[in-house]
Image 1 (cartoon, rainbow, N blue to C red):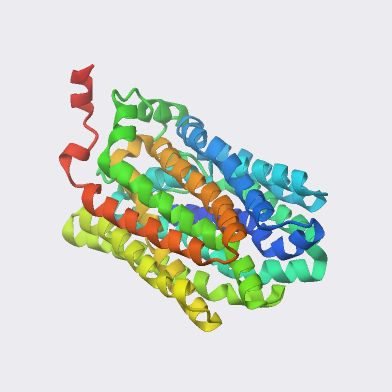
Image 2 (image 1 turned 90 degrees about the horizontal axis):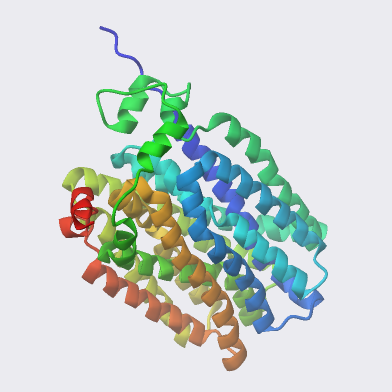
Length: 442
């Protein structure tokens, strides 16, 4: 009997997810590299810069939670098309900003549009990948974040230098429009309805010997979206998910602190020009790309070898956040460009390394509502970004230096380490969603 050769179409889908995530993060981070130019043109102080950077997170927080609900209800295919269309228009419109008020408005609109992005990413991985490939898939997709920031530094700085900041935003706005038709043409919300996925691949995805075809997306979604008694109580009180959400809040604080303020820190503290800032920003995000990719693969390998989610997911989170805190401490006490570059590179690398494990926990714990769970987690992330952007500006304006801002990052990372060590137990049956028990409580 000839065995059917398995297709690998799920990895092409992950490739498309990777591409839109690159576009997503280049778009949201571009303003940080343009900020030295914008702040001069619009006479912005540190508080104004923080407010402008934080505008994105206000919009992001508004829709990220509802974005998760939208993805669970209508699917990533349609929701991602609409989101990418609106955020591409938003980034394009930034080129025509005439002052602080318009900058704030288009940044907030960009945040609203990008809200569904990561719930959609998590939903795609949950629907298209088997459990032992999810952290790898998430690692492959999420490595787009530091990679976008690594490449975005010199590229965005070069675009701003040669075409001006207005030309830079116009060029970036076009990228999303190219991706949209490719995604809509190739992706289906469930692999059962993709003619590019054969039965052998579908069996691997569904981890079963039998597969069912010919079921509409609507029917599959209705089945998977059936009432789950006690779901909200589980999502909002589960110790593993809550400690995961807090650790992801700290992850978000780290990311938005460095994404939004690193160019300004290098420019103001060490008097680097725009092109130098772009190139000095490469190393931290390059290291983060390598570490995020590696930890994603390591997490799934640990899970395959041990069967323990605690070892595979929880340990990478607290270890990397502890190392991120330790890496930043020297910057608080010493002023040296080379030391700052080394310490920040290590902190960004360790801080980003476990990104995929945060996402994987939501799929591991409650796959049927992974979009909703991700929406809650990403809401923490959005609030962290708002606080990191605005509070950093206030601290700098008040103290005249970045030392206090770096010290706060260190303390936050230590609280995340403690929370994960004490409460993050994804293998504990008491922490798992139990459908039958939830029914009995009704």
